[in-house]
Amino acid sequence: MSGGHAQHLLYHPGDSPVHRLPAQVKIVAALLTVLCVVATPRTEFWAFGAYLVLVVAVGRVAHVPVGHFAKRAFIEVPFVLVAILMPVLGGQAGALAGWNILAKGTLGVLTSLTLAATTTPRDLIVGLQRLRTPAVLTTIATLMLRYLEVIAAEARRMRLARISRGHDPRFLWQVGATARGVGALFVRSYERGERVHLAMLSRGWTGAMPERGVAAGTSTWLAGLTPVLATAAVLGTAVLVP
Image 1: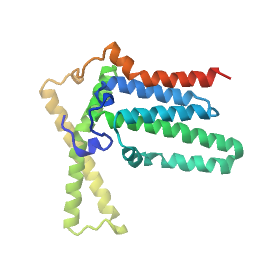
Image 2: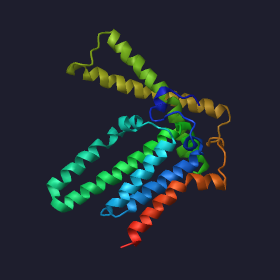
Image 3: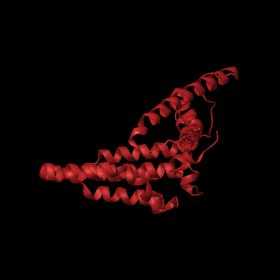
Image 4: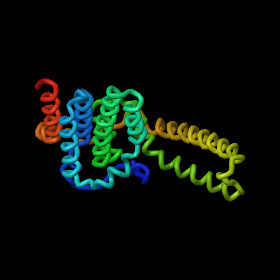
């Protein structure tokens, strides 16, 4: 599967121990970490600080620069704005609710970005396949990654063709032309998908991607889930210790 530039906006190349872990191990670790964070009572402020230290430590082991996370964390801005408004709208209860959204949202975003920064999109799909994700989902994701760059290139060519014929997207009265271009791109993509599907059937497509990746041994799982064990210990302390 070819990899275009659009597929690696979140990935940071490296050869760290985190990069070398099988994708399925990192996916399970990220999921369990997020579940532990979500299950933590919002009043246990120290626990969220401990979670942040653990996430940052994993990022440092992976040698992913802070700037890589900072540039991609803007997806959280809407949640930050909601968290800021909560104390104004709900008083003390709103302040706790805002803190809950901010703390858990930030940790969830950082965990997801760490997973994406240390695992290529292709390996993520392989990891999901190794975890026995339904074949139809992994197939759709594989084809989406494969042809996302193709469709983006088609959109760029169509935009260039419109501009060369006098189209100026800055003016409001050009919205109709832009909308027709989006419709034409959809039709072309749909027709391309049908042709690709027929070509796959003619080559023996059975409805599922071939098994890829390697199985992770017990020692690999233990190494990959070590941060999760620490996270679970923090959660247990926060919940059980008065």
